[in-house]
Image 1 (cartoon, helix red, strand yellow):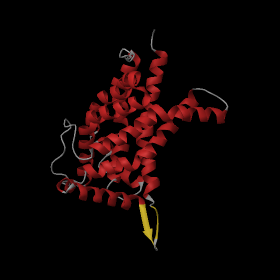
Image 2 (cartoon, helix red, strand yellow; image 1 turned 30 degrees about the vertical axis):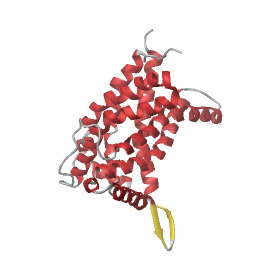
Image 3 (cartoon, rainbow, N blue to C red; image 1 turned 135 degrees about the vertical axis):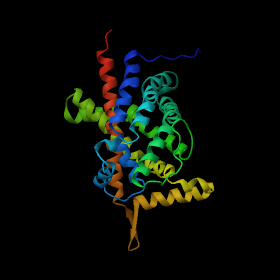
Image 4 (cartoon, rainbow, N blue to C red; image 1 turned 90 degrees about the vertical axis):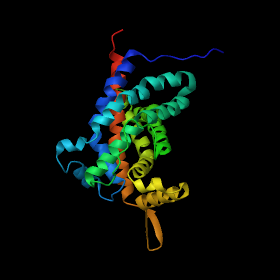
Length: 272
């Protein structure tokens, strides 16, 4: 059987090449707030206040690096996904897209995270990760996070839209938008602890000096500290759980819903 694949259409290419970078730059403050949350128990409001503490424009610190990387990133999430899925199916498309995305944006996102940390605590990370380097601490965590997020965009949205249409008894652009947002919120919530673990890995320089077993112990300890609260002999979910779910949703769900709307609109209205 011959190898069969399908090249992405022009509107999909335009959405990935231009819409993606714009979206990722817009949500920079949300991403920076998440980064600060990896090392702080503060509330979401306080973290966002820290993001803008040195002025409104400072909220977009590091955004230019991520926006530049977002062009190939969203060419990956859009056109490359459709290409991969044409010969490997939806699941294969999600996996290959996520790996490709990490290779593209890992360097920029890691530099962004470290710059945000240095803005909060100057000198915390003396040697900032170069934006061109596609690997480093937390690489595997980054891939896993992207698998979940991409699944939200490409696998969760349709069933969420169907459910909303059944409940509302109607089908229109608003139910589609709501379905996209709901699907991406689900993915954002599932990926929240993974993203925080990635943020911890890249903003904790001392981890790199430890053996692999001790690194794992530190990471497990971080997750327990972040999400579990033990008192009176009882262990329960920490108050940070709803904070991180909310902040991750504000970043991922908003960004991916904006992107899927741009992609869908261009495909529907592109001149034939």
